[in-house]
Image 1 (tube, rainbow over the protein chains, first blue to last red):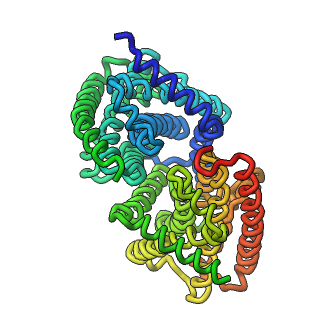
Image 2 (image 1 turned 90 degrees about the vertical axis):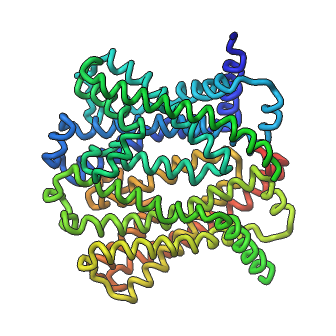
Image 3 (image 1 turned 120 degrees about the vertical axis):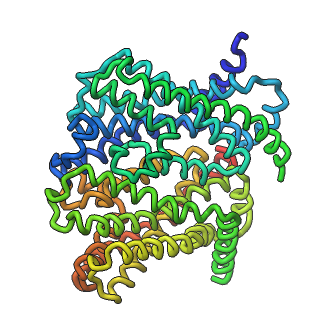
Length: 270
Length: 269
């Protein structure tokens, strides 16, 4: 185990991004964070002049709408980026014509996907930091943050993103479609997982579905630790639940991926 | 002229077959607008709707207000997505074949944009049905202005799509254009927050996007029952934008072709 594949993938992906898609790499990453906070700010400040519905504070435990939306949106952004990189990695190789040569090499799948994920995590972390910096003048504050709990939440979050993107990656490779599958998933997660509004507003059956997507737990965990300053032991059930569901996703992802690769290679020139 | 029409028609048929080869396209047509609309509806619920600064946003008609904005945005987005899908022609190598043939470049772009009109019409129908089912009493519109405004919005969307398409011809690395042109469109063109409330700097950004005028004209016609005379300024601006964009497209096409001759590459970067 000298992580050759992991290092190789890391290097290759960073170089591809930097050399082939430099405009996207820099401009795309800097601006998205900015838009997120701007959109929320406009609704909050301009349209409703900070008048919140009283149910919001009751449900969320905070009246700080902007921070609430910022944390939610950044978590969502992280998920989207992970899916775009990890799920799409193999199908992008298929499109760019490198899948065949990749498959000829005896490479470890786990390291390949983790390498992709690592590149993505690095760039998105940069993006998130820019967004937080941009958000400070808008009146964001993280004064209650519980650092330990927050760091653990990040680890759990990355794990669950990885699980989801593995499953999505299988669907993509099998159907050879990235457009419909990814955007449907994103739109659905954005709706049910409590990204910009508490999921308690939704009808009960939708909330039941949301419970089976680990993002719901992840967003809650990150918000609790960043905005409400809750510690690790106070929210142990959410930790365990989220970890369990994510593990299910990771397992399904890896088992399915083996099958999907075979199908994808069969259909490579069709 | 004949070859222009021929290319144009061929491109429409090609793209239509390309998009509708699989039934999954209907997911994007029905499900996505529905999801994003429901999300916005709920994200309005966290605010105290009785205290909004705009008289026509109340708890009762916020649905129709949002639906109209979303309908216009979806129309534009259809065209933007057609531009995005066109960028794959570069990856697949078909763009090179098109440029090798003596076909008119503008006809190809136009055909590609018009091909997604069919989707746009479906989207409009879906949204109209939503509105009629949810709140038909909030709508006060006259037929003629409604039809004209609808045609104007479609026209603007097509030209906007062509414009993006022409920009996509430059390189594989054009995804950032979405970040620059597509995402701010949703924030600044008044889909959720009306332009009147914007501070000056935001109004200036809003003025760039054709969608801004489209949404404003549609809301005036559908919610206030404005006549064509009352919205003449929007019609005029809309037509001017279309002309300006068409001129820009022609110039860009010439530059692209020169650029391609220099780099000698239409498939890679």
